[in-house]
Amino acid sequence: MDNFDFYSPTYFAFGDGQEKRAGELVRRFGGSRVLIVTGGGSVHRNGAFDAIASSLDEAGILYMELSGVQPNPRSSKVYEGIELCRRENLDFLLAVGGGSAIDTAKAIGVGVPYQGDFWDFFCAKAQPTATLPVATVLTISAAGSEGSNSCVITKDEGMLKWSMNLDLIRPKFSILNPKYTCTLPAYQTASGAVDMMSHICERYFTNTTDVALTDRLCEALLRTIIEAAPRAIADPNDYAARADLMWAGMLAHNNSCGIGRVQDWASHQIEHELSSFYDCAHGAGLAVVTPAWMEYVYRHDITRFAQFAVRVFGCEMNFVNPEATALEGIQRLREFFRSLGMPVTFAEIGAKAEDIPDMVAHRAQKPNGFPFGNFVKIHPDDMTEICRLCCR
Ligand code: NZQ
Ligand code: ZN
View 1 (cartoon, helix red, strand yellow):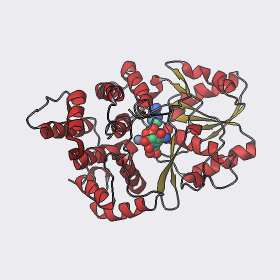
View 2: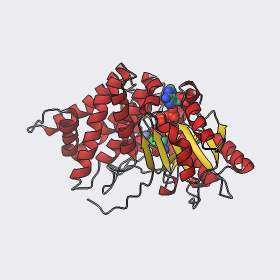
View 3: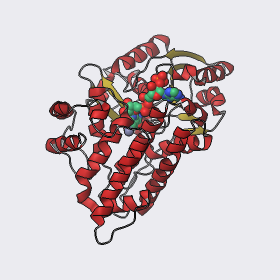
């Protein structure tokens, strides 16, 4: 296990009814004039917004709403929010929704006190040193932004889907009521499950040795998601399944599972090109890319892939031919994604083989564009091959 620092200061209020504490928590963390950031309307339809608004009203806290954040959130909405906060002298950001609303709030948070263009933080021109406090009311178990140090925004010009990572932007608090996730369409429930599984796999496939504890944490989370996601899809009101998914999504990405080991993140880097080119759901893109990435790299550490197959999917270890076990695990993962109704090929998300060179070139524009990934270094030719594997 490597040395590590771990700083995860988010205060979590989990469970049914916790949304009633929004006003109290905003006050506790220093807010008095709040910008509520929301998506395309789901939180108005399922009652989450009204519950938060009445809690803020009771606490005498002023609020305004910035609505219309789209999935794969855009820079234009961030500029709008920065402008609004400055004009109205708002001092607190409360995202009500999923990763897209939360990441927009995080980007607004660092943008308001900064004199330059907030995008500087995403193209490594500058590091934020201050932020407005950000908090979340989560309504989809997926991205893990409710506890993470990450923020992913797409710049409208050039459709650059880039990210920023630093502890400063971790939410001050997150309210997690699993009931609000019961209104999710099956496709979004499934995309969320894939995303959280991928967050775990990005950490699990490492070259760091002696990481038994975090391996076991990863495996427990993966097994829990594999059990809970089909139940939540079969019965959207299954509170126990929704609750397991909600906390698993947080643990998958606040880095509890990634400390003390070098992490990979190649599948995410390739997926960000897919959701940039085709505006697909992030989790759906990962369902296509992750098994293909695995097929491309598994020979690098067959033992680790066989361990994944045995411990996560209960495959029988083939001691004579461990490669067969490793491959069986990858196949089981792909079948699981398919069983959730997820796409597993380029064609199924509307991606085209002829766009692969453009995607590779688009990726190269990113600061530190190539190589990326740490388990196996991915160069342009490798990304091309992984994308080709997605076309089968
Ligand atoms: O826009 P609304 O109307 O709210 O509908 C949303 C949206 O269409 C809907 N939804 C959310 N909660 C709902 C609901 N529909 C019905 N009932 C509910 N309770 O779900 C759709 C997807 O929402 P979104 O916020 O985009 O989902 P998600 O949480 O998956 O976030 C995806 C974004 O997060 C980024 C992704 O790249 C993508 O841009 N990520 C952020 C990370 C982070 N900050 O740590 C890490 C991830 O790896 C990821 O890259
Ligand atoms: Zn993700």
